[in-house]
Image 1: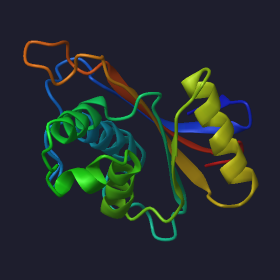
Image 2: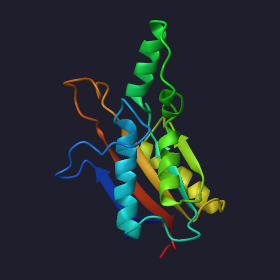
Image 3: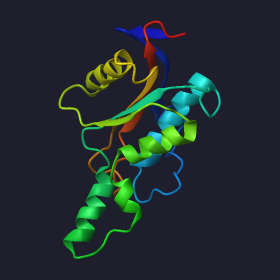
Image 4: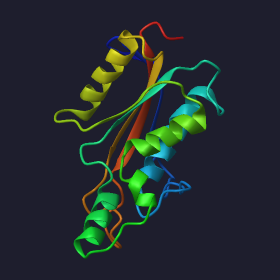
Length: 177
């Protein structure tokens, strides 16, 4: 455990880590590696913190998803489909909202805090951490899972670069156990 300002780092994870391939698929999400990457890094971090699912009873853990560009692949697919007069499939309605996968993680782990999505204009980690501090200070949550994700512009393009990666950090107040 380490401290970051007024916060304590309770667990941290990245994807990829040595030996990782593609993140496992997430039921209900198609076409893009963004949702599986968010789910995989969150799962890894929360497992390191709790060792099991769901989180302990009464856990008020917020999820703060920070991504400057969001799910590039899904957005590009919807844009291209609409541009040629097509209709995107119904899965893209909810998948095109980046916080839908954060809600999926919250439901899967039984987290009872708010779910937020930020598009930073400056340092993503600093902006996400500031939001976490505000949520904890205001009493909206006891802990927060901060997920930072960016995709390479050519992610999900055959032969393109893999997703840049993601980091998840479980943060608690400075006096967190």
